[in-house]
Image (cartoon, rainbow, N blue to C red; front, side):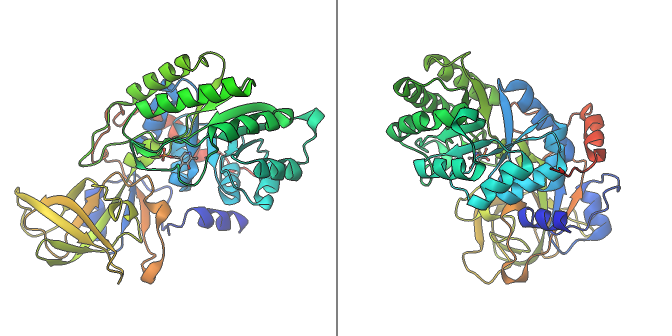
Length: 430
Ligand SMILES: *Cc1c(COP(=O)(O)O)cnc(C)c1O
């Protein structure tokens, strides 16, 4: 009961899934089921392979940012790929990860937490690492964990504000201490900390590796000014993936930029490096299958929209890769044209300008598969206007598009994925 509640709190996707059912492909789902509700097509092996690649290549600990996609099957795939650390931002995320993985290292990376969430994470779920960006939050954490100065046992990570330029989503507007505040916070936190760190987030879908180098230069200057050694430097998330109109530079360029940044900051070899990737690990792992309900000129009215899984196709204007799936009738025309999509709700904001390139003869009843929706797709769904229904199924298709430096489907991971599926659910008793 409690477990289901937790799962629903963080992962609102309605599921009607037979977990033992064999993997199928997207076209056969359309052929057999002719789904009239959006279907989330999960590629667990793609996610596991990407997580494996990232954990192998990144020169430090990899914390999966759970908010990006908290679906339990996604978490299991990330785990199967070798991720053992989780960046959680709420009590519900912490509880979900702990229920699923006894040995997971959970880090509470939200700079503003409720007192109840701090207490529960610390005493029920064994969380020791907390992010702060203010003295008041530090005081709350000390209070609620009843940590004693002489028995310091917390990991305290100070979040630095950095410029969000170069990223599709600027995440600097809300959180982060200035350099001067961070210096003071590091000094104030030291007596309570078993380990001390600095973190930042360059913004999501960051297309510039240099953003990490610059943020690390700032990090180095804060450490020098504080006169306190830090044990951890956390470069956050922001690692990008491909969309229909975007091909980022390979991941290895980001890792090189990070290592260079650490060196110039005088921190190489002196700190433990963390990253908090979300999007890059899971985006390619889910596509969503929609149905066209009406065509009006170049506008397609479809059964999912910005209040569903396509929030990023709205105002942020992400151009997701698309593919037409038709059963029966003539083969789709090889000639393509640009379309706009309109979502199912009555809000006129529920439109997605794309443009989305599809065959010229798209018609009512056709299906459209939209790729790269594993990140911030299902996680942002709402029930607005009654469009709360969507299913999730496992498929064995490759992703619609690959990101440079990403592995394609990776067979050896089948085994570890199967093991992760079978691993017993965990409940910590004390
Ligand atoms: C959202 C978020 C992430 C994940 O960001 P991506 O751009 O998806 O990699 C990591 N860390 C923090 C603190 C976040 O808020």
